[in-house]
Image 1 (cartoon, rainbow, N blue to C red):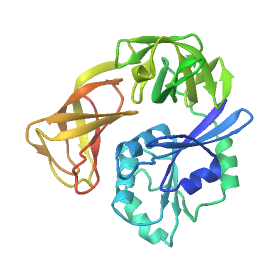
Image 2: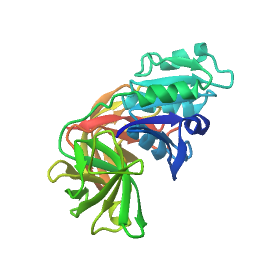
Image 3: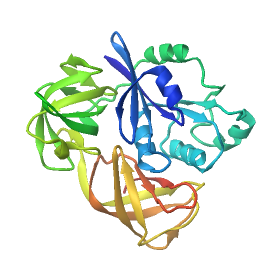
Length: 317
C-alpha cells in the first residue's frame, strides 16, 4: 500500500475534508484509504501552546499545507520552521481575507518561495485525487522506523504507530529500540488497517511488537537495525542560526534539540555567542540520550524566545 503523509497547519477543517479523524494527542491524524493507496494528514493539535507538535508534524509530512488566516507570531514561526526543515514541497492556502500581497514578502528567500498560493481551502475532492496519485519517494537503506504513539492492545500486546523513515520493515524482523539497548521482534504489521508482511519507506504503520511494554517504546524512539544509529548524550554541532531569530546564543542557555520525533532538553556549551544569520560550532549537553545518524539534521530551539522559538539547524561535527 502506498501512503502519502502531509502536514496541515492551522486548519483541522481542511484535514477533515481529506480524511477521517484517527489517532489524537498533541498531534492529530486524519486518514483516507482507497484500494492500495492512502493519505494521512497530520495536524499539530497543541501548537502554538507547545512547539514540539509543530516539529513532529513537519517531520512526519513529505508535503505541507499551510493555511494562513491571520498574520501573527505563530504564522511567522511556522514559516521559519518550514524553511529550516527544508520543506520545499507545499501549498499556501489563504483564508479570512488574507491576500497574496501580504504573504509573498514573508515567503521570499525561503524554501517556501515557490509554493503555489490558493485563495480559500481549495477543492477537497480534487486535492484528495491528486494526493492519492502521488508516487512514493523510497529511501533505500537499513530499516528505520520513527515511533510517535504506543499502547496496549488485548490479544496483541504492545502496538506502536510510526512512519518508516528508511528501508523496509518486515514481519518477524528483529530490531533494536533506540536509544535503548533493548530489542524486539515485529509480530505483525498493519498499514491503514490492512495486514501486510512488509512496509516500505514513507508508509504509516502499526506494529505489534514482542517482549516490550508501551512505555519501553514510546514517542521519540526509533526501531532500527543494529549499528544504524549513534546514541549520544552530547551533541557537537555545526549550527546555522536562522536569520529571523531574535537574541544571542550563549553558553549555559537551556535549549531543546529536535531530531525526528525526539525533542530533548539540554544545556548549551560554547565560547562567545551566535546571532541571527551566523554559523558556528556549539555543544549541547542533553538530559537524556538521543539516537541519530551522522547526516540527520538537528533543530535547535529556545522556548523563552521573544520571536520564533526555532533557533537554527545543525549537523553533527
